Length: 482
Image (cartoon, rainbow, N blue to C red; front, side, top):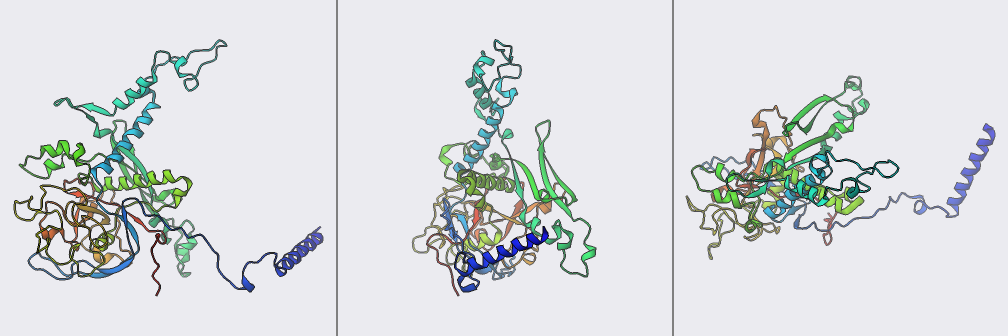
């Protein structure tokens, strides 16, 4: 039997060789390695975004300034191409996120007996004594229950009546969004590989690396009282799911930031109207924390992927820009630029027109034409075609803040990421913001200055915009060949 098997294998090999010789199967030209071909996808322009092509520049303060206590710390970095929102995320776009969360909760409640009104329904029986299930014959199973009433009940459960004003309004406390993030960076590190033999290529130390590495992952849940609970779990590595982090975030902006950010100021109209009134739809959303901004980016990614079906898995996720990406985009990749425009003056000398929305003088917010924020895109864009990179609202970046962040990061796509645990000291929960805002003087809206805020803070002068890493080359984009 074994001899027969060997003969058959030999005959098969001769047939394959004969086929190759006669051209029946050609793997390459003349036996040379020519590579495997593939389809190159020209990524379409994402809606409302501008392509920032790859480039290099010196980021940070180039000249020391004793008056402002600035030290020269410029250093060269390079970033790959990415798409960036041409304006800050507006109230209208963020409302779409809020309403999606509201509607998803309503859909869940329609299937919940406590909200659908069928917690004590009686199932009718047919003539043979078999139960009639609601999903087969709702009207017969519950003849006294109108499905439209159940829907209305679920909708009304998301709203509340203000006991003082009597206004019917959305209940912010219920608007929670749950999502999961796979930490590709930690999963890719050699120290976290499942196979101990591949964690360290130094054969002299191979036998030392047998202890399973310890990982940390975030998880979250809602307790019996409806409160969001978060915990960071540290344990030995067990599998790829250890790099999946779960978050639950209340997504409604803190509209009271207009009062809490300014002592002894009458800003109550902004509390009532800035996010709720349609007249502010095209203004940048504020009162959004770093955590909420990340939740929005995740929802935006999921929203796009669902529309693309199976092809959606190939889409790069929306995210907050790294500090380096933000500064490169703001300064249009030009080392000499301190602002998104040429020179150090925030207005044109001949016409007196302002280049950004900021605080021109002490106590004078209106000289540039606005008291608080302005509609996005009111001022001219920079050379990359991006609006409001100085003033209007400061913007969250993905980069964690530490005093030595510039010395910790690489010069290639620099990024310092630290996902603070609940029990970490509060100072470890700082994230970098950039660009200055409508309440800052001209110096503080410079594009080369680094500022920070705590990741759970919600301010009336901080907003955000999203980026997406570029895939290949966009339509019309030429590849740089050197």
